[in-house]
Length: 68
Image (cartoon, rainbow, N blue to C red):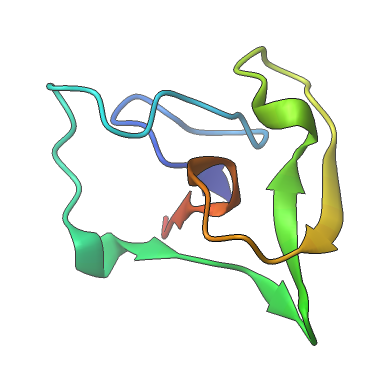
């Protein structure tokens, strides 16, 4: 999976999900859920290698992922 970013690929990465150059549409974005938890980028950081954890779903950008 890749975090929502036009150039994102490979390992999950957090990103500025509302960048002006973003080409994804809302239908390309998903939340990865397990019960009441979502895949969440640790502290919403944007650095490669930032851990992903299960966290209560909040609908924030660091819980939004691009299908790839």
